Image (cartoon, rainbow over all chains, first blue to last red; front, top):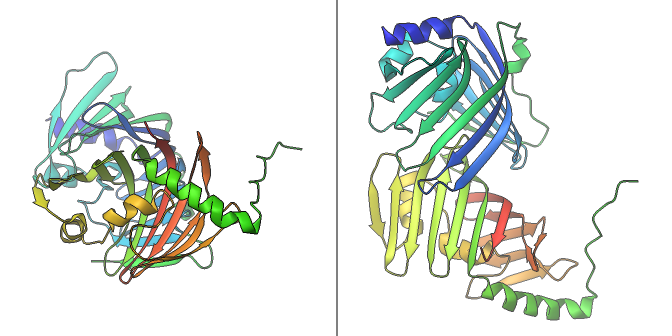
Length: 187
Length: 185
């Protein structure tokens, strides 16, 4: 099945290290948001999304909670791991088949040489995005595209993708400077 | 040594108020812009850090509020006739007050009508108290029940625009960082 093929590819990577380049365009095609940085994902539900520019920011999921640190804002927000929040795309890369099958309808687009694309449509209507597309080259993640319900589309390109490198646990522990405003937002 | 940007020229005390008055007049003439930045909202119980795009064409504006990686959370479109707020769950609501709509839909207060002025580094209409920095630009402002601090001014064309604005309100603290200012475009 298509979800089986997707999770088979995702399951090949116990961990993923990659650089990312994010570009969002609104319905009129104007470039409205860009960022770049590094991503580390470790199955089943840990990830580190480090934005380098334009605003440094660090998002870490340790499997239970998601911590978002904004140095500009001197603010650390700690939330429970809510699948509906914007963190879902990173979680998908960790490839938990049950969660993907529960939350998304998976369709495989035609394969072009070594490029494979899967489109995921959320089963719950009020999700933060209408569709999500994953692109793999030689069975390694190369891009992710999200279309949200208000007409913007975001493309995240991954480069220098390395899979199954050792992942030090500290990567998923958040340290913040003294005096950071810590906000617990655990529903 | 590395070439540092020229130190902002300090305006002598006496001239500061005068420079401030002419700066305000110029800023009132700026009614078209596109800006993008980050907004940190610190309230009880919800707090958030979102990306913001703001397009202003005299009395019409469009504010896009998005998550860090680009998913649009809300689109606010304002004109003299009124306001429409569309949110991710496809609902569009109309109202007279942006503040009310945002509070109901997103759970936090964004003083949009005042921000129209504050974002340009000038007081909104009505009484206010202020202090100026060395360049004769707004440094702190007390207005209504908000107290604000302006910093990181940037020169864009012949406009001097704030890059960081912290607004402390009765129930919220907003930190607004603007990284991409396009006045008059």
